Length: 368
Ligand code: G3P
Ligand code: CA
Image (cartoon, rainbow, N blue to C red; front, side):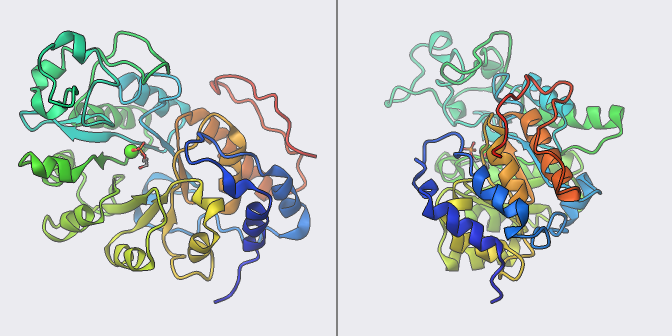
């Protein structure tokens, strides 16, 4: 296989201790000094491949071929995750795609929540004493939608805790995005993730079926539609594709490096891959497969999850990813546009523009 020169950068990253980033880190350390060498001529722009991932989904939401900004749980860095406010904020910060995680209620309604339990992000323990399971937790599947609608949705732990928010259904989330698309003329996509399919199966529920049917009822049925289903469970993705006949774009996401066998299986029916972002530098062999000349070069790579430091996001775009999941939508948009403008004019100063609505000025200069 042809060795893309980009691998040199990855090799250098691993050799400088960056590979020892703790898994719990919310943002990878800046590798700008390495990147500067890359940008300054050790590696030319030719190996970069912005726009090379020509999936129907990508073209549908960004005809210009720029990498996608995926609002992770909405603009969850600013507002309680998975609320209509967080989704709307992400929309107007320039997200290309907005992510709802999905779990089911007792009455089978798909709601937007990262957790199958609601203790971490709502006041459910105070509102429904005595309704916890033996492990002390309150499961969404044990509560009707009417009950869940009485809860106050809060930010996770100490993060963006503010009041006045509720848990939206997936239908409400989609309604928000589709209505805004109609009013703005934009085509912002969605990338729902069914959470814990096995747990739901243990409760005699098929979250995959509910999800696919809900999406279809809102017009999302084909690969050309601006909707991707992502899942950590490859069997669930296969069920949706095979048993349920789902023709939407499918993305296999993973937090640990999958075996080659697993990747090969995913490649048979999935369209994109979503690795944990640390793999960009910790797993050069994996990355190699997605680079030009690699066995998986035709697939989009969508790493997750970037935080408020623009440099790792900028670096990911320079590496040529097809999109990123990020909590701070505006930071992602600015990092993407900066990377794109430097690609177009490599001699331009490496300063990050402060864009209207970008939250706050970025004062940290790039490395010389
Ligand atoms: O699917 C990308 C990302 O959302 C996965 O992480 O735990 O936030 O769902 P998580
Ligand atoms: Ca998710």
